[in-house]
Image (tube, rainbow, N blue to C red; front, side):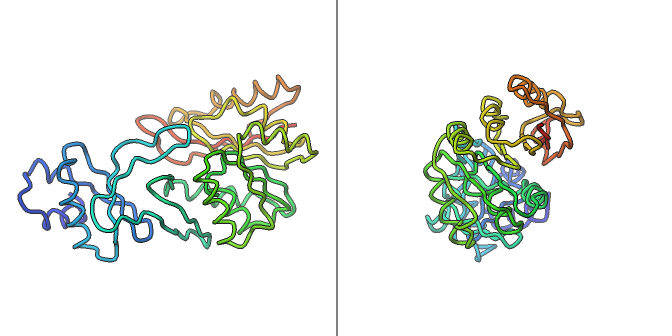
Length: 282
């Protein structure tokens, strides 16, 4: 058992050894909210576990349990409050960037922190960036706060995420740098291209890999620009199978794509990895 698991077990009465063995080995901290991954065998004991957790860590006011995987077009988390207050709206500060959101409605992957830092570090002064699938500002915010882009166009379809995106722009004082757009990513990217806006960099941060949106991303990307394309690859592979999505779309548009860098973000299940491809498209 981990130290956390052992400590939590000491606060629980009437649990069998089998149930204690199923306790989580850790938790996710989101300001005043703690999120626990509880296995199905503990579903009926969630309230007791949540109450014991707050007894151990009173700085947390709300305990949520994951009831399923992230689902749907908007990649919504499956969370349920099992103890404490019903307030699931949080503000998380990461590398000096503030993210406000409702963790019961929007995901916030701690495992992607290195990629949020990395992408912001790639942006050079004066760049125009189009962030497709912007969400609550996962990549838009660190780019706007930490880099010096000329303009960031952040496109998000989910109305809940879009409202938090706008709130986060104000929270981080970058409203003048970022134009938030509520709509379909392909439709809005093509509109930007029609207005003569040519991006130096286009971000496609969405899983599963948004293959059908690559043509619109290319329409908004100027020759020689950078395209960041996300997907899932076999662990240890060179990402060429995923890159084929970009290469095929580029050739169909009369353009050439080069895979400049493969960045593994995190494990994504047995023998799979979440990866980002840094592509140059001429």
